[in-house]
Image (cartoon, rainbow, N blue to C red; front, side, top):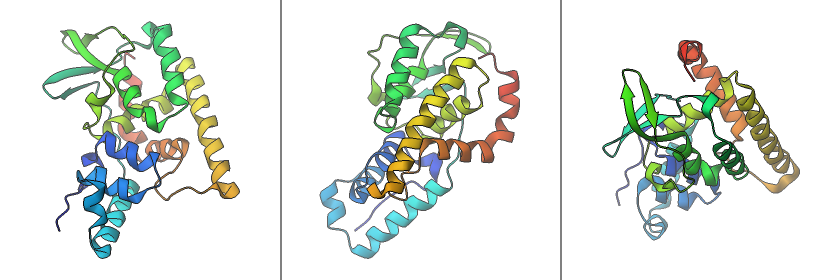
Length: 217
């Protein structure tokens, strides 16, 4: 039997990341990341299955964050929200709601933060208005590194509203950590968002320092 898995974290899709962080079923991890059915995974030799899990663990431990302001995906140019001063009440309410079920809503968060570009002037651009009806599945096959980069931006932002949201994400993560300490259990892949954010900050902070110092956002 053959199985093709992401070679490194940047090759992991957002859907794969959501699956790994959102479920404790290793069959689902290998199924989603290998683009095969759960039935196929269950027929795999145990040795191959164990190697697949170990490989996913390694790429998760070597995660990388990328935060381009624009990305081209499936032939469409998407832009990161260009100005936090124009962040609408609806966007803010929804992103806080999405944060309540963080990993199940990671695709919704991504579709809120990155939207199709409507006009572009050099490095400046405008994006489509938020409708709350964006297709969350559009970003399922985008690199997990882009989502990691967007979350790294939240951690490093000096904007008051983003700091408030960061605190709310911290509370959610801390609750999850307490649950694990109380014996409810947490898989080796299911590290809290806060711990993951801090890891991204330590490993990528210097690389993105110039961006945050010069960003118009």
